Image (cartoon, rainbow, N blue to C red; front, top):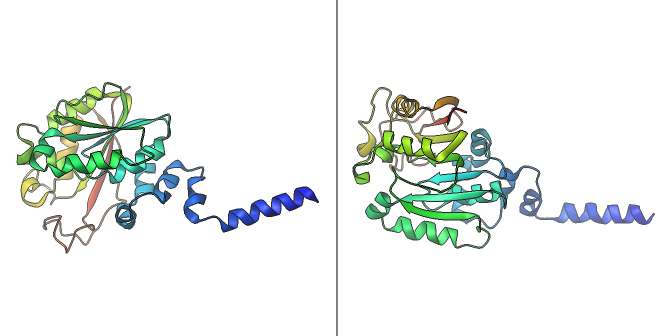
Length: 253
């Protein structure tokens, strides 16, 4: 009888628990990280568009990994990655010095995020984008909506091939390089990088494969077929609803 009463009390407590608390006890660490009620409201409002659970599950994020969030912006993915990899993992938020020089607010944004409670496994790096060094072999380098910037004028002498060489060096054998970016018109190469902040998917594939990686995954999870791929990504007509490609590369064993 006593055992039945205890079980009933536990069941009642679970039913009454807030959804966020339930999710944080989930066996799925990515879903739990996304459900964390401590995430900023503006981040949670973007989840429907960015689909972080499906994105990071597809990427192969797991507890214990060492992951670099390359060009983290305000830390949208950094926060999620931190809790997804857990105390045994680590996240390096690498804000390129070239980007900080052009947009000084990038330094303050990521430093403020990393100083929030609960992110002890996050290290913020400010280094040249083509010469970064986490001083640890990485399991994954993840970059979302920023690969095109490696070719942008504000990055100075850096370019995609140089960044890819740095990523290849930083990853352990078998490590993953995950790239998400805005589709440009097919065949446009680098022509829309500065004008529209978009890049041709095939251009990205050529550059990354040339660095020695192998392509191991593609996804249309973030596809928006209605996007004509001809508008600036900050245009209110398409912002948050651009057609995006997802590519996953691996450094050979």
